[in-house]
Image (cartoon, rainbow, N blue to C red; front, side, top):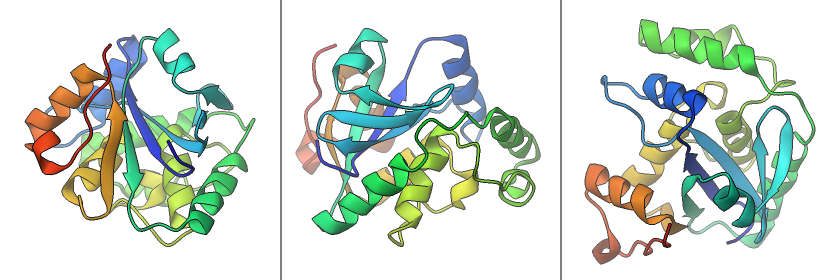
Length: 196
Protein backbone atom coordinates (compact mmCIF):
# COMPACT_ATOMS: atom_id res chain seq x y z
CA UNK A 1 0.00 0.00 0.00
CA UNK A 2 1.08 3.59 -0.54
CA UNK A 3 0.75 6.90 1.28
CA UNK A 4 -2.66 8.37 0.58
CA UNK A 5 -4.39 5.07 -0.17
CA UNK A 6 -7.82 4.80 1.44
CA UNK A 7 -9.02 1.89 3.56
CA UNK A 8 -12.76 1.39 4.00
CA UNK A 9 -13.93 -1.19 6.52
CA UNK A 10 -17.01 -2.98 7.73
CA UNK A 11 -17.30 -4.48 11.20
CA UNK A 12 -20.02 -6.59 12.75
CA UNK A 13 -20.64 -4.54 15.92
CA UNK A 14 -23.62 -2.37 16.81
CA UNK A 15 -21.94 0.93 15.88
CA UNK A 16 -20.78 -0.40 12.52
CA UNK A 17 -24.26 -1.69 11.71
CA UNK A 18 -25.85 1.62 12.79
CA UNK A 19 -23.47 3.66 10.63
CA UNK A 20 -24.18 1.41 7.64
CA UNK A 21 -27.92 1.82 8.25
CA UNK A 22 -27.72 5.62 8.34
CA UNK A 23 -24.79 5.97 5.95
CA UNK A 24 -26.53 5.40 2.65
CA UNK A 25 -29.38 6.98 0.79
CA UNK A 26 -32.11 5.16 -1.14
CA UNK A 27 -33.08 3.05 1.88
CA UNK A 28 -30.44 0.37 1.47
CA UNK A 29 -27.67 -0.38 3.92
CA UNK A 30 -24.20 0.97 3.15
CA UNK A 31 -21.44 -1.55 2.44
CA UNK A 32 -18.82 0.17 4.61
CA UNK A 33 -18.89 1.97 7.95
CA UNK A 34 -15.37 3.26 8.57
CA UNK A 35 -12.55 4.99 6.68
CA UNK A 36 -8.85 5.56 7.20
CA UNK A 37 -5.88 6.73 5.17
CA UNK A 38 -2.45 5.16 4.76
CA UNK A 39 0.37 7.34 6.06
CA UNK A 40 2.94 4.69 5.07
CA UNK A 41 2.76 1.22 3.48
CA UNK A 42 2.19 -0.40 6.88
CA UNK A 43 0.32 2.24 8.91
CA UNK A 44 -3.14 3.76 8.69
CA UNK A 45 -4.36 6.83 10.53
CA UNK A 46 -8.00 6.55 11.54
CA UNK A 47 -10.47 8.26 13.86
CA UNK A 48 -11.66 5.84 16.52
CA UNK A 49 -12.39 7.21 20.01
CA UNK A 50 -9.29 9.30 19.26
CA UNK A 51 -7.36 9.69 16.03
CA UNK A 52 -4.84 6.86 16.15
CA UNK A 53 -2.34 5.06 13.96
CA UNK A 54 -3.04 1.38 13.31
CA UNK A 55 -0.74 -1.28 11.86
CA UNK A 56 -1.85 -2.74 8.54
CA UNK A 57 -2.98 -5.46 8.08
CA UNK A 58 -2.48 -6.81 11.62
CA UNK A 59 -4.78 -4.46 13.56
CA UNK A 60 -7.58 -4.80 11.02
CA UNK A 61 -7.42 -8.58 11.00
CA UNK A 62 -7.31 -8.69 14.82
CA UNK A 63 -10.53 -6.64 14.93
CA UNK A 64 -12.12 -9.00 12.41
CA UNK A 65 -12.80 -6.13 10.02
CA UNK A 66 -13.57 -6.68 6.39
CA UNK A 67 -11.82 -4.03 4.30
CA UNK A 68 -11.11 -2.70 0.84
CA UNK A 69 -8.15 -0.50 -0.12
CA UNK A 70 -8.58 2.12 -2.85
CA UNK A 71 -5.67 3.96 -4.43
CA UNK A 72 -5.88 7.29 -6.23
CA UNK A 73 -4.54 7.17 -9.78
CA UNK A 74 -2.32 9.89 -11.25
CA UNK A 75 -1.51 11.39 -7.85
CA UNK A 76 2.24 12.12 -7.65
CA UNK A 77 4.33 11.07 -4.65
CA UNK A 78 4.60 14.67 -3.39
CA UNK A 79 0.80 14.95 -3.18
CA UNK A 80 0.65 11.53 -1.49
CA UNK A 81 3.06 12.86 1.15
CA UNK A 82 0.76 15.86 1.65
CA UNK A 83 -2.22 13.51 2.12
CA UNK A 84 -0.32 11.64 4.84
CA UNK A 85 0.86 14.86 6.50
CA UNK A 86 -2.59 16.48 6.60
CA UNK A 87 -4.17 13.29 7.97
CA UNK A 88 -1.41 13.01 10.59
CA UNK A 89 -2.18 16.54 11.79
CA UNK A 90 -5.40 15.13 13.29
CA UNK A 91 -3.48 12.61 15.41
CA UNK A 92 -4.62 12.24 19.06
CA UNK A 93 -7.67 14.47 18.63
CA UNK A 94 -10.92 13.34 20.21
CA UNK A 95 -13.59 11.83 17.98
CA UNK A 96 -16.42 14.00 16.63
CA UNK A 97 -19.37 12.04 18.04
CA UNK A 98 -21.72 15.01 17.69
CA UNK A 99 -20.92 15.16 13.98
CA UNK A 100 -22.15 11.58 13.61
CA UNK A 101 -25.45 12.63 15.19
CA UNK A 102 -25.53 15.50 12.68
CA UNK A 103 -25.07 13.06 9.82
CA UNK A 104 -27.93 10.96 11.17
CA UNK A 105 -30.15 14.07 11.20
CA UNK A 106 -29.07 14.81 7.63
CA UNK A 107 -29.98 11.26 6.65
CA UNK A 108 -33.45 11.68 8.17
CA UNK A 109 -34.09 14.99 6.35
CA UNK A 110 -32.36 13.73 3.17
CA UNK A 111 -29.82 16.56 3.09
CA UNK A 112 -26.27 17.38 4.11
CA UNK A 113 -27.25 20.82 5.39
CA UNK A 114 -26.83 20.11 9.12
CA UNK A 115 -23.39 18.50 8.91
CA UNK A 116 -22.02 20.95 6.35
CA UNK A 117 -23.40 24.19 7.84
CA UNK A 118 -23.98 23.71 11.58
CA UNK A 119 -21.36 21.24 12.80
CA UNK A 120 -18.46 22.77 10.91
CA UNK A 121 -15.62 22.87 13.42
CA UNK A 122 -12.57 20.76 12.57
CA UNK A 123 -11.29 20.14 16.08
CA UNK A 124 -13.21 16.87 16.53
CA UNK A 125 -12.81 14.73 13.42
CA UNK A 126 -14.61 11.55 12.47
CA UNK A 127 -13.20 8.88 10.18
CA UNK A 128 -14.39 9.89 6.72
CA UNK A 129 -13.97 13.61 7.46
CA UNK A 130 -10.29 12.94 8.19
CA UNK A 131 -9.90 11.26 4.76
CA UNK A 132 -11.97 13.91 2.94
CA UNK A 133 -10.05 16.81 4.51
CA UNK A 134 -6.72 15.28 3.52
CA UNK A 135 -7.92 14.90 -0.07
CA UNK A 136 -9.40 18.42 -0.06
CA UNK A 137 -5.89 19.72 0.72
CA UNK A 138 -4.70 18.50 -2.69
CA UNK A 139 -7.79 19.73 -4.53
CA UNK A 140 -9.72 16.45 -4.63
CA UNK A 141 -13.11 15.55 -3.18
CA UNK A 142 -15.65 12.75 -3.07
CA UNK A 143 -18.58 14.62 -4.61
CA UNK A 144 -19.93 15.97 -1.29
CA UNK A 145 -18.61 18.61 1.14
CA UNK A 146 -15.75 17.19 3.23
CA UNK A 147 -17.62 18.03 6.44
CA UNK A 148 -20.53 15.81 5.29
CA UNK A 149 -18.59 12.90 3.77
CA UNK A 150 -19.48 9.37 4.88
CA UNK A 151 -17.47 6.18 4.26
CA UNK A 152 -20.15 5.15 1.77
CA UNK A 153 -19.80 8.49 -0.09
CA UNK A 154 -16.11 7.71 -0.54
CA UNK A 155 -16.85 4.21 -1.81
CA UNK A 156 -19.60 5.42 -4.17
CA UNK A 157 -17.37 8.13 -5.63
CA UNK A 158 -14.33 5.90 -6.07
CA UNK A 159 -16.37 3.14 -7.72
CA UNK A 160 -18.10 5.65 -10.02
CA UNK A 161 -14.69 7.01 -11.11
CA UNK A 162 -12.44 4.06 -12.03
CA UNK A 163 -10.29 6.47 -14.02
CA UNK A 164 -9.41 8.19 -10.70
CA UNK A 165 -9.34 5.30 -8.17
CA UNK A 166 -8.49 1.62 -8.29
CA UNK A 167 -9.01 -1.25 -5.87
CA UNK A 168 -5.60 -2.48 -4.73
CA UNK A 169 -6.61 -4.97 -2.04
CA UNK A 170 -9.23 -6.14 0.37
CA UNK A 171 -10.93 -9.06 2.06
CA UNK A 172 -12.83 -11.51 -0.10
CA UNK A 173 -16.33 -11.09 1.34
CA UNK A 174 -16.42 -7.29 1.19
CA UNK A 175 -14.85 -7.21 -2.27
CA UNK A 176 -17.41 -9.73 -3.56
CA UNK A 177 -20.22 -7.56 -2.14
CA UNK A 178 -18.74 -4.48 -3.81
CA UNK A 179 -18.31 -6.28 -7.14
CA UNK A 180 -21.98 -7.32 -7.06
CA UNK A 181 -23.35 -3.90 -6.10
CA UNK A 182 -21.16 -1.85 -8.43
CA UNK A 183 -20.90 -4.49 -11.18
CA UNK A 184 -17.12 -4.38 -11.36
CA UNK A 185 -14.49 -7.01 -10.77
CA UNK A 186 -11.16 -8.51 -11.62
CA UNK A 187 -12.09 -8.48 -15.30
CA UNK A 188 -12.31 -4.67 -15.03
CA UNK A 189 -8.72 -4.40 -13.83
CA UNK A 190 -9.54 -4.40 -10.14
CA UNK A 191 -7.45 -6.31 -7.60
CA UNK A 192 -8.26 -9.74 -6.22
CA UNK A 193 -9.29 -10.05 -2.58
CA UNK A 194 -7.36 -11.57 0.27
CA UNK A 195 -8.61 -14.60 2.15
CA UNK A 196 -10.54 -13.85 5.32
